[in-house]
Image 1 (spheres, rainbow, N blue to C red):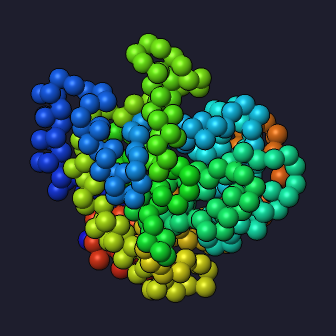
Image 2: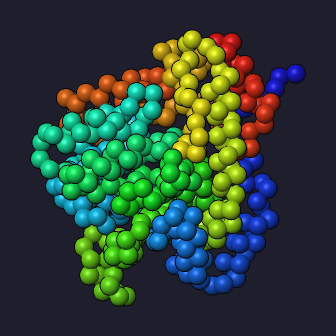
Image 3: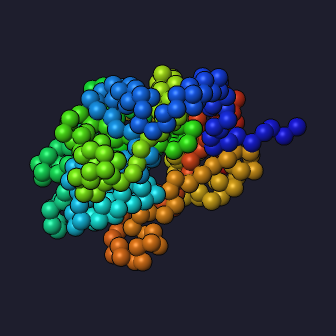
Length: 369
């Protein structure tokens, strides 16, 4: 008898134990007659700010809006230059371009996939001044925030954390993602470590003035109803149902992260194959949003795993500076580690509801390659 395929993720399994609580939360919102920016949004904003260790949380429509509004909040505007990594499917780059600003690409650390502080320092030494840096905590692993923040402080730049894949990750001194830079963006897309039943996002920060500016920007730039006082505003609001869902799920986040990390660390310690490079086993600075291996024979490996009933994906196959939408504008930029990863990375199944047997099957399949 053939064993069932192991999915890269399973939202059905994830949500099934919560269906009762989520249905009740949705019914309460429907019965309230208040659906946008009501008490449930305010409650979730307070809960999530406290969870992150920040004073302020502003719920918005999605994670990309959160990045754009965070950039605008710190004053990024037309013509400004913003440092970004080029290995995360254009999310940060798209937000920079939406502000009318210019992305400045820096390479990533080998086998880490987060911004290389040395590469950022090299960028800072050349060209015009830069306004800000987006530090993406890719795959659930914290970027090198101590070094990046120090560089940015020395050059008068704002630091925006892209925490879309790192809800709950902690630095060595216990500070959570979202409280390590000047301002942070989160996505609550359903597959995230904390995911809504639809789309959603948030901006988190410690500074009251900055938070007030982002609150205005998420609703047309209003200073009062129908009074558009702040340029660059838009309609980007977290709705009451998604806020209620997120409040119901937030208490489970740390447990989910612990299970994700346990799965990831089993892979790191038990996959033993010269053709497969695995990340090192990790602690609280990694919440295993994705478990990504590398192989010079990625396509062969992917076919082998598919034949063994293991689903995989590629995060991400095309670097930002090579995306066709740029029409070759950044063709002269060379990012060796970023470009190598685009050819080698492969994502294995890693989600909280995976069974130990499924983890073993993935390990065995990798070791047979």
